[in-house]
Figure (tube, rainbow, N blue to C red):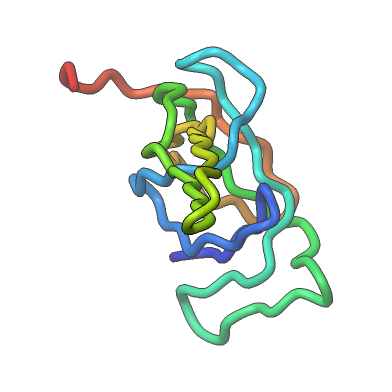
Length: 118
């Protein structure tokens, strides 16, 4: 079973045991987060499409770590004017491991499985 969720202004196709990188979320590594904005739910039988969201569906995940994205450099140069500007930016990101896809208004189990050191 997989779902399409919306978080941080972007859409992600997720299934259990997937790891996704999303915009910064509140919480410490090891915390459980719930994504309630489920746009589509598919798996057994006919897929369920939301208008705009599927009622009673949610996706639970565990925060793995907070990190920063790659450096993006913006460089402007105006020729023959001795004028240039260099600016850099790194986006704050959160790595989330999807634990389960929930339907029918079910709550996350909160059971966190121990994994090997990464």
